Amino acid sequence: MRTMILQIWALISVVAKFVNADYSEYHNKHMSQQLSLSNNSTSNLLLPFDTTRVPGSPESLYIQDFIINHYKRQMKQNWTIELDNFQENGYNYTNMIFTLDPTNSEKYIVFAAHYDTIVNIDGFIGAVDSAASCSILLYLSQFLDTVSFEDRYLLDKKWDSNEMGIKIIFFDGEEAIHEWTETDSIYGSRHLSEKWMKTGEISQIELFILLDLIGGKRTEKVPNWKIKSYYKSSHKYYQELSHIEDKYLNENNNTNTVAHEKELFPTDVLYLMLNKVLIEDDHVPFYNANVSILHLIPFPFPETWHTINDSFETLDINEIHRWSTILCNFAMKLLSDGL
Ligand SMILES: *[C@@H]1O[C@H](CO)[C@@H](O)[C@H](O)[C@H]1NC(C)=O
Ligand SMILES: *[C@@H]1O[C@H](CO)[C@@H](O)[C@H](O)[C@H]1NC(C)=O
Ligand SMILES: *[C@@H]1O[C@H](CO)[C@@H](O)[C@H](O)[C@H]1NC(C)=O
Ligand SMILES: *[C@@H]1O[C@H](CO)[C@@H](O)[C@H](O)[C@H]1NC(C)=O
Ligand SMILES: *[C@@H]1O[C@H](CO)[C@@H](O)[C@H](O)[C@H]1NC(C)=O
Ligand SMILES: *[C@@H]1O[C@H](CO)[C@@H](O)[C@H](O)[C@H]1NC(C)=O
Ligand SMILES: *[C@@H]1O[C@H](CO)[C@@H](O)[C@H](O)[C@H]1NC(C)=O
Ligand SMILES: [Zn+2]
Image (tube, rainbow, N blue to C red; front, side, top):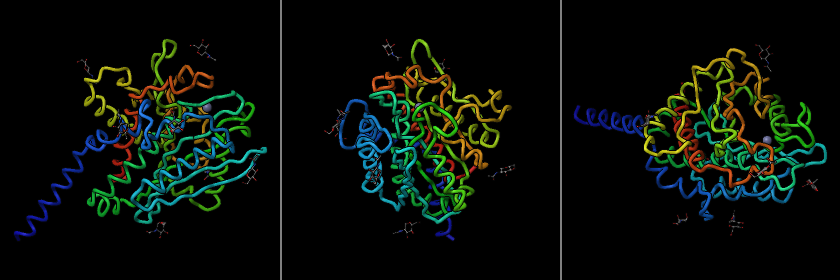
């Protein structure tokens, strides 16, 4: 009897610990070093992207190695690495997929971004398009690796019973080579979706979260933006993300910067009622295969979008930290409680 009470108490206290966790200890320890615009240390996950990343180029191969090595060297758990290589229009493309699935589950949450840059703007860096999003995915991966590894309760019980794995996808060839058309754009996501239609993996995706154009500075021309809810099938997830955003903004309200304004508006349902693809991006072939999509893209787009000015000077580190924190909490919520 006595031991049972102790066991129950122990269980309650880990549940309480989990429910109350905002992981601020983890973020305080790691975020300012891993996501920094000034400290170019070996743990920096953002500055290595400060280069062009044209498909198949030496710079692209360098960044592919950097991303792959992050999963090979920094992770404690068994992440599987899948490279999806193909050629089209004389370019070599490589999608990179990293899977953490401790319970060999049937369902996946996908987080995705594209790492390539525009070919025909010489020297285009693509800081918001989408270097910052890629660095957020690397940070999120390491967070999940560490926190779920350390939190035995989560690993043994919650993750287990919920049976969801996570896939992080870095798409190549999102940008058009010449001009955006259905066949000159999203080379990587079209290729991977076709492959996963054949294998049936596409129907294992519970939710596909696509990050794009995240992390920019507001400017006079574009002083603010919204990240809208576009699709009915994912609106419940959008609402949850908005709750997490509220919580974050409340807890960080003394940090008086523009990066602490609300960006998600669950009651703003105009786009939701239209329920169609209004912004074409890597999610389209997955959307067409009936996958539930959460497209996290600010609108209006940052002023530097598709100009040579989309460089690291126009990134807002507070914005990057904000989305990293919110998405870490969101991922933990999905993997532990489901929705
Ligand atoms: C820069 O990063 C390194 C390694 O993460 C850390 O030891 C150092 O304290 C950081 N320097 C500053 C000024 O934050
Ligand atoms: C960061 O340091 C590495 C290694 O010294 C260097 O190759 C790279 O150019 C630096 N990156 C930036 C953005 O300063
Ligand atoms: C790692 O995961 C893969 C795929 O789920 C599995 O085949 C492999 O046995 C795992 N390796 C270890 C050491 O657990
Ligand atoms: C594509 O990759 C192949 C094999 O790695 C290589 O031989 C070829 O030169 C590459 N082509 C381009 C256009 O980079
Ligand atoms: C933040 O603080 C300001 C001033 O104290 C207040 O007006 C605002 O409502 C607060 N915002 C949030 C999200 O709590
Ligand atoms: C998606 O769903 C629609 C409507 O239910 C159906 O007609 C279509 O065949 C489905 N497409 C795929 C690829 O499953
Ligand atoms: C880039 O920024 C500079 C300085 O703000 C501006 O003069 C120029 O018009 C911008 N270029 C483009 C292509 O937007
Ligand atoms: Zn773009």
